[in-house]
Image (cartoon, rainbow, N blue to C red; front, side):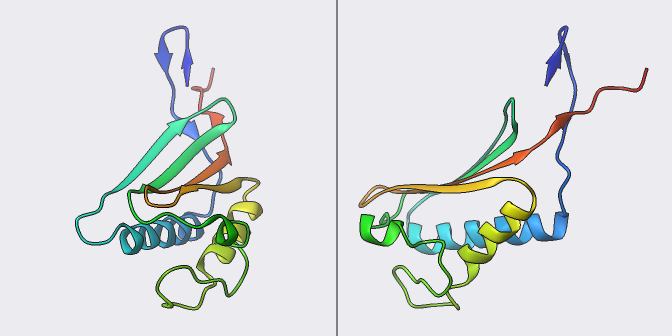
Length: 126
């Protein structure tokens, strides 16, 4: 955040263990679906609402019929590995932090999972 040309850190009140669990899951999924030679990108941006974290892969993408159910427990896409609970649990954790999680995907081009968490500027005490 910027106030009169001075940059202040943004504070997000979050459980670091749970937030890491979400990021670990999203990054592991992206690496799996990017495949050999694919790429994964993580972007963190301060917004007026707080912080936005986007995890993108240049992989196979998610078909539209699967996209609508991707955050449901037990749903697998692609390889039938894991319990199918990772994205459902990630959504529950993000919701518990007052945030949102969404996905955009194009088959053959890749997917981007975006988390928005509320935050506030950390202005120095006066």
